[in-house]
Every structure is written in structure tokens, then in C-alpha cells.
Image (cartoon, rainbow, N blue to C red; front, side):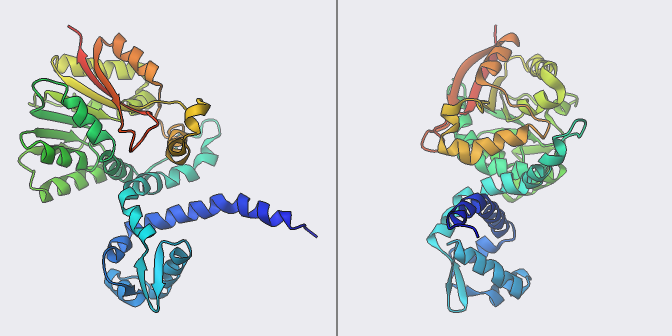
Amino acid sequence: MFNGALEGRLIEATHPIRQHVLAVALYHLFDTGLFDALNGVEPTTAAQCAEHLRMDESKLTGFFKYLKVEGIIEEQGETYMLTSKGQEYSDFRAWYIMLIGGYANTFFQIGEKLYQNSGWATRDAMKVGVGSCGISHYDAIPLTSSLMKQVENGCSKLLDLGCGNGMYLVEFCKQFPSIEAWGTEPSVGGYQEAKRLIQESGLAERVRISNFGAIEFFEQDIDYEPDFIVLGFVLHEILGQEGEDGVIQFLNTVTTRYPDINMIIIEVDNRIDDPAIMRHGLSLAYYNPYYLLHYFTEQKLETESYWDNLFDRCGLEIVAKESTDPNIDSTGLEIGYLLKKRG
């Protein structure tokens, strides 16, 4: 016979399973269109919702009842609606797109990729890009905007290498009506999504998109002279795949091609070994999983001091360095650099 203490231990031990299933369920709530179908509308029946989205009514009812227990959906008779708690998840949709839609399979591959010569885990590059662009509304876009304002003449032509689904470029062109932009995106899905979004936003005459990576851009014969280049979370990709020499060569290629360019680089400071910062709530909820996936996906995060040193060796002056608004992210782990070639 087991004593009563086992039940308490069992509840605590299986709590991560509950959180895992809930995270996946919330991702599907967004990805299937159910969240939008339920958000801000009158209560609807499962039958009505199933007909609207061509779903199986019985399965959808089970999904709704599960979310009801978790406090995401409220059931009133035969109708369902989002609770206030459920509605609040709308602001954080992008995190679910990136970490669940983009990296769920990555996390599942960790076990097999722990072994020698096992290669790298895969990811859904399009979902990663779409999610990252959505998150950028809260961190990278305000950070980039703040750094841009520190250059006297401002920005007229922007080059974004690794633009994801184009949301970043669309947002900038809305904020700065005089800006022209060029974005590159290696993922075919992200590139197609960017083209669609730019066309729908009426920005096709101001924003151009190319389907190749950051390094490939400089192998093309392209007549475009930007005054700003944005490299958001790009250098750690190059570092993981081409090594430090590859990063140095890439940065030298940029400044050789565009000697007067203002470079905005955004990276995440790798402080996974710092117990003080890793006790922060956002470090546990977001950055710890974020650090983990980079060890398995041919990406290499580095420390702030590493990037400071590397930029110095590349002949780049750090004109300004900032982090995110502490009301959004007070960890200080995301860092934005404004760089200029010395001399």
C-alpha cells in the first residue's frame, strides 16, 4: 500500500506534462483559426464552429471541454466562448508560433541528437520566422527604432537580412513613411508569406523581397545602397554554421560593400551559466528553453563580451548599445548594437 504522500508527489511530478499539453493546445487554438473564431464574438456552439471551420464536431467538443477545465474557454449551456484569461493569450500568440509551431519537433528530437555523429535537429523555419517577427513588435522593433534615432540623418533605405515573414519590414515602413526597404529570407515559406503580406499592406512599391540568405545576398549583383542594415538574430546562425571566421568574413563583406553603412545587430546574451539571471521568471519561462534549442539546431549563442570583442576585431565601433524595455523584458538578455566601421 502506498501512503497518501505519493499523490502529492505524483501531482507535482506530472505538472510539466499538464503544461506541455496546454502549450500545444494553445498553439492549435491559434493555428487552426479557432481562437479568432471565438475571440470577441457572441457565444457559439461547437456545431456552428465546426461547420465554419470544416471540423469534426465531436472532436472539437472534446477540445473545448479540455480548454474549459484549463480556464481558457467558458461553457454556457451548449455554447462556448473565450474567458478573459483566454483572451489575454492573444498578445502572446507569437511565442507559441515560434516555440511550439517552430521548435516542438526540435525538442522531441533532443534524445536522438544527444549521440555522437547524430547531426542537427530540424525546425520549421517558416513558423520560427513568423513567430520571431511577431515577437519583434515587443522587443526588436522598438530596439531598432531607438538605435536608428541615434543617427543624425536617420534612415532612408533599409536592408533586413533574414526578414522572416516581412512583418518587421511592414511595421517599419508604416512607422517611417519615407523609408524604402529590401528584405531577404532563405525560407521559401517565409519568403512567400512576406511577399503576400507586403502586397496586402500596399507596400509593394517600397519593399522588395528576395529568397536567399544573408551571405547569399552579397553574392548577387544587386543595385541597392542602404544606409542601414538590420541583422536580427542572424550572426549566431552564421556562427553556428560557418564558425567565427565565417562571421568575421561576413561582417567584412558588409563593410567592404557598404563602407558607410550603419549596422544594427540584435543578439541574445548567453548567460545560461549565470544562476542569478536564470532565476528570473522570464529566464525560466522563455530563455531557458530558447538556450536549449540552440545547442541542437546548428546555432551558437554567445556572450555580450564575446560580441563586443569580435566587433572590435572587425574594426567596428560600437556607437550605441541598448536592451529591451524593462516593462517588457527586464532580464537585459536581448542586446541591440548600433555599429559603424571605424575611420
